[in-house]
Image 1 (cartoon, rainbow, N blue to C red):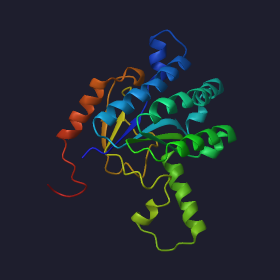
Image 2: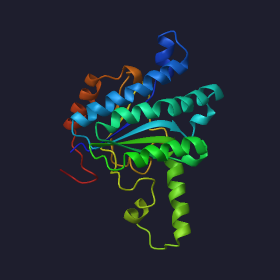
Image 3: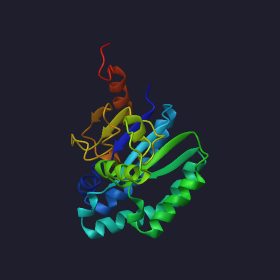
Length: 225
């Protein structure tokens, strides 16, 4: 069953370059693509989506680009909430959010709280997120808790959102074929799908192809079928 799809939204800058536009224009277009993809996933009956919006490594990008991304978040998240809330979308945020500053952190917490009772589909926005950072943060919580008896199930309780199931399918756009520190713990048995399509051009047909490909695979989880 396809319950959770995660997206590595790559190619915004290259898309903008092809349009003879600045890179920021690509991020603007990519942000609006998220809404479309959420609706398509909901129509498929998918209950959870995760979007890799900003990684812990993205701070290496030009300062102007980073500032634009977070300015876009602040200015558009209210619009996103107004439209998505009516469609039963629950919005959550994963990552080292407090490092983004008090204003952005409070915005994230506000809309997370406002949508907490929505149950059509969960949209998990990974902001200032890194898979290794999440594991390190989990270990710090375990040390603080003074729990000594740890297994995989117990460890999971210390992740950012332990109630969100592991992704069944991870889709990466733009032709790159790596996970780039995304959901390092949770992706152990995820199916991976790579497409050359740049994120702003990602269409319903592209999602259909990814899901069709997923449905043809046999997931063994280390066993034999």
